[in-house]
Amino acid sequence: MCGIVGYVGPRDALPILMGGLRRLEYRGYDSAGVALEHDGVLEVHRAEGKLDNLVTVLSATTARGHAGLGHTRWATHGRPTEQNAHPHVDCDRVTAVIHNGIIENFEELKSPLVAAGHVFTSETDTEVVVHLIEDALAGGLSLEDAARAVLPRLEGAAAIAFVSGRDPGTIVAARISNAGGVIVGYGEGENFLASDIPALLEHTRTVAYLEPGELAVITAAAVRFLRFDGSAIDKVRTTITWDPVAAAKSGYKHFMLKEIFEQPRTISDTLLGRVQRSSGLVVFDQDLRLSDDQARALPRITFVACGTAYYAALVGKYLVERLARIPCDVEIASEYRYRDPVVVPGQLVISVTQSGETVDTLAAMEEARKRGARLLTFVNVVGSQASRMADDVIHLHAGPEISVASTKAYTAMVVDLYLFAVYLAQRRETIAPADAAKLLAEAFHLPTLMDAVLGEELKVKALAYRYHEARDFLFLGRGANYPTALEGAHKLKELSYSHAEGTAAGEMKHGINALIDEHLPVVAIALRDSTYKKMLSTIQEVRARAGVVIALANDDDLEIAGKADEVIRIPRTNELLAPALAVVPLQLFAYHVSDRRGNDVDQPRNLAKSVTVE
Ligand code: F6R
Image (cartoon, rainbow, N blue to C red; front, side, top):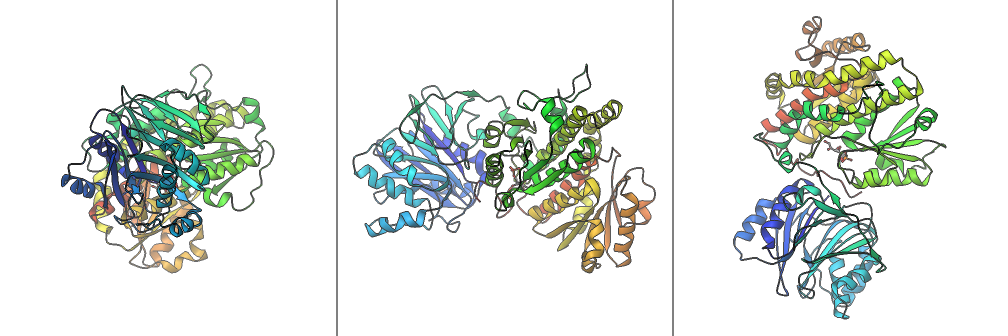
């Protein structure tokens, strides 16, 4: 979850590190810090809370250096205090370490160090590493060799980097497991390090990724890659083609609002090139290697994902079963590997993930691979660990998503899953060509419909302002929009800090009706589809119990007005595509409730964008 940056070169390292941290603040914002090495002297500055606090601390210093590391933290071990902020230093304040992940055996490693006289100043698992390095350096090793001696002793998840006055002008960075990316950026006479691409884009587009068990020795003149056993690695360099300007707010008050409004464009990008003109077939690029024969023979699909991506996967199950007639399960990734899952021969396991770095999702993929599954990932971040682990990759084309709350990646997931369901159905001949053509034509119309929904923002905002004080909310849906209800509730609770529950409308009578009273706004997704009549009955039942109903309905629905207290309207599209459209007003609702309450919309409390610890 933490963000890591590094620089070595002739320029003043501090502004480069701070610029990188600014772009990574979404990864964690409990504390931040920098370590700068200057002519063999190490300087460390840290601050609790957001990056601006570190800026204040630094303004009272003359900190400088030509090699340095920066870190923004999301706390795992130890409270979010200045004392627990990274970088951590050894007793002599000569070497500094930054780390993303958890060192599971830190207590075991710490006891002998304490017994030998090392003084620990934090509650973190990370600090143990710098004391181990201190001992190795005292034994006469270089920073590189000290790292190689210490790293194999660490168990758990970690991306880690060191800078030391003992080895001026050098950064050593390593990746210990799948969790926590480490990316080296190549400059001219200078080199960079980061956990995520956006931190590098201002300086370079030429990068290389570390794999687990690899380390990089970075100086201004060169970068060497090696395995922990010391054997050299010849790394392939990759060129990043994204637009860095896309990562700025472009005049919107928050990244989240910008990302909500980007959706018509991201959906157009998602659809681009995905339907072959000559044949009308859905095609993905060469990263989907599944052959048509394999697609025809698929006996079962299991989706694994977390949070919002899990709700997208629930829509995926609905679509694939409906169109391609393949039995599907959807598993919360953090549960999957702990319950001895069954993988049948030929089974496809599909991970759905914006970041491609969510540790639970990666662990579920690993578990599925061990059990013989073929792995496909739907992933947004190009070059992420999920994309490198999977046999097949479908990139979401949503562009960088900065706001912690996922919006445009969710709709891109749903639309890509829709395309994938049609793709499978075409190969398996479970739908007629004319029906496939109709489904695809409707998908191409979706960006226009989304524009229309976004055009109604002010109405949703007024509604959000009317209900922003409610303590609890209930979201109801059925069929393909049951996951939409779950996602609507998820978005609202993560942003507004209100309790919100999503449920299948048919479950009301089985217990949830007991919650209904005049203080509970109930958002009911009642579109004109095969579940419409049932949804109307549920709405009537809620109102009969004095519940307040906010209906999400189609704009040609004349019946609903008399049945609900409030109506949000969206245009009609086919039932299978509707989840991608219906979620948009719910995103706006959550956004405006949160903003009205004065919450930090882009960085909700206790959350981080990339969850790289278990
Ligand atoms: C919600 C949200 C999280 C993520 C979840 C999975 O708005 O952002 O629930 O959806 O942490 O993250 P990815 O998709 O990166 O695997």
